[in-house]
Length: 111
Length: 113
Image 1 (tube, rainbow over the protein chains, first blue to last red):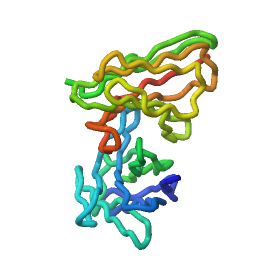
Image 2 (cartoon, one colour):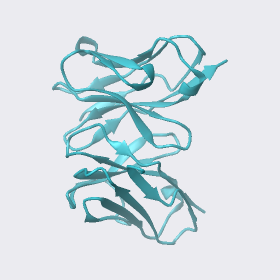
Image 3 (tube, rainbow over the protein chains, first blue to last red):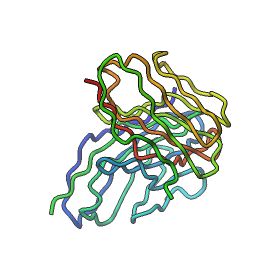
Image 4 (cartoon, chains in turn brown, cyan):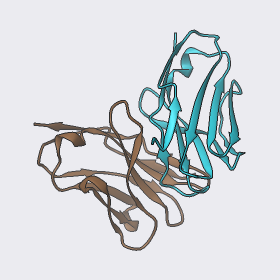
């Protein structure tokens, strides 16, 4: 069965610093991969998605992610973090019938 | 206009009660889902309907019963509520089955006391 792993439960960065959130997937074929963000008390918002083609994907709010088949990874990056980026981030993989989510990474932003 | 709307947003109820959560989407999507998010934020698929047909029914107690009167609505009824049912329940929709990029509702926080 496919699975998605987010190794970092909690990350703290300073405002203005760069960010990288890790995601590893296990799936035989080319996966469809997603990053979602959940602000406190809110639903999940899609940041970006990868289906095929260019392995560097641009998303909303200045986020990007890079698909690396050799490392089974789909890491999320942002060059300069804003205080409003503090939230829970979920990586997900499209299964045959539904999305499978990682356990999430909580991002804290220090002033 | 909210794309995927859930009601109620908060639900506090006693053990043993029966309750329902409603979900509606105005995106014209064919497929709708219920996910449960536990206290550790882990999201687990419960059910999925595609054009009113049940296509996913994960290992969920049969106290939970989804109902889809039409493809824009997916409700969740829970009988004999237990403490362990306390969680946030999210409804989501996608254009077609197997197509990611879900749109999520804002969730229903269920607290069983």
